[in-house]
Figure (cartoon, rainbow, N blue to C red):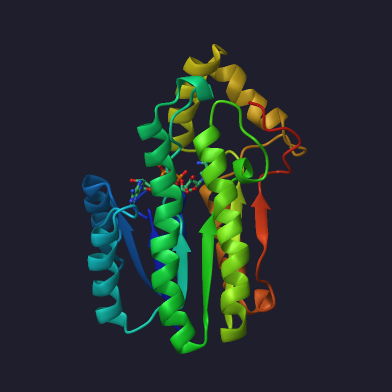
Length: 254
Ligand code: NAD
């Protein structure tokens, strides 16, 4: 049975892999992303996936995009509120208010706007699944990443509350907390964290793996696997949970 699956921040990284994996299962998939050139490249590589340019932190932009999806599909079965940004990497004394606000806006306002839309449609359907992307930074503190850690903890509060609000309507709400995921984003973060902490990039890379019991980074496919399981009948009683995919973080002080 084909499901209608929406992924925000879906043109690259984890979101792109989630979208591709659901499309491979035969589901109808749509992504949006703020980066127009990433969207164009993703659309070319994935012609069966519906694509749109939208900024999750902008109410008007999301209204226009989400209305187009609603008009096309009439509802939605699975929503990944995945778009996020790492924000500034610096000691709190050195973080500008605008940089704090833009990190909170993409990570939290974006999740709010996406979930508000999904909740309305799913409550009317009396079915659906919302999966928010938090982070191990949303379960631990993260030195030099205070706006990001605060936003990702906020995601878990939103997830828990929506699971309570929507559970009686047959809608499940969960979060995935990835550890350090191989890919372009973490390469950028390693460079920024190296600048903020004075540590060598390779030292930080190794510290991420050494801080886990399995001594590992994770992949976008590991995260997509978790999303596919949450959307499967085997997870039909799973709601209100933060599913951590990280090789078991022991310390997040990289
Ligand atoms: P990524 O940078 O590869 O992909 C994020 C995508 O979101 C990009 O395509 C980007 O253009 C898009 N995006 C950014 N701001 C946006 C906005 N305002 N509106 C719409 N789209 C926007 O990063 P990723 O690693 O795939 O991250 C995906 C999610 O996973 C994020 O929420 C991130 O915080 C979270 N996460 C990532 C890691 C990791 O190690 N990569 C770890 C924990 C959590």
